[in-house]
Image (cartoon, rainbow, N blue to C red; front, side, top):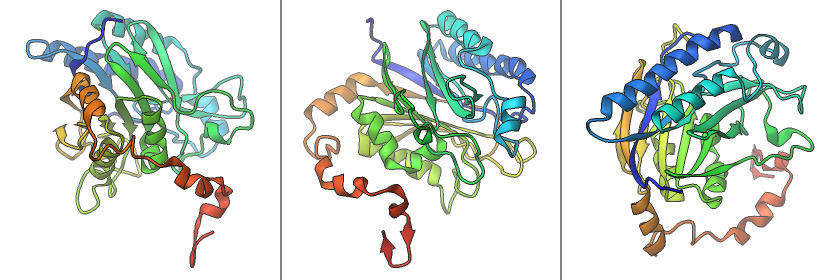
Length: 316
């Protein structure tokens, strides 16, 4: 493998109307591929863009109230014609693309619709990540965790020429176990494909977007490339989406961030895998992965999940 250990990543946020029918996906992907070209060609005189990340719902959001409607009108299998278009673009530009999410159907799970993002590189489709933690009660698509007999990795990590990449979607990031699973699987760059809305988005007083992106970078000693929806309320009602897409280093420094507020934006920042590997090899203080005492928590996670819900008087 001919590694590229120092490069720039682009977090590409979008402001587009929500599709109501899968026939709209072809034109939508054309717009997103245009953003790939703009980022790679526009910044070529200054540095190499090798990784591009798009937000959740960049293709389609679960705008219908039932799984049946999502399946009938918006969901698609993966791979499909659109993922092949991404693969051709990745080969043309020698880049890796973390797509925005598709609503996915899979004949192995005929009753389910997944919220799925794909990692696509010059060699084609490398992995798909299905959202493990749907944002309840709004998102009616399935979690693979909840399907009896589900036999695919929940948290895949992919070895690439630009480092080991792991992805999770939006609400997943509020659960520290998700990115910790990716980090323990070897991930060096954590990719967040997100549609994080106001008032929890990228603006004070909450600013959960920045808070969790920086925290997950620090606790896992990993780069974070986080693309957030920048759609206005007009395009994706009933919410407005404040963008703020960002790149964070393994010590939690914000290397680049789009100004909060709706709108299409491309924000680029450096990723230095060589520096990360050096620090992971030498660091002794705040080395949270090696200091992790997993056995201290085995009793907590052995409890049935319904007992972990917070109740008056405490947990359990």
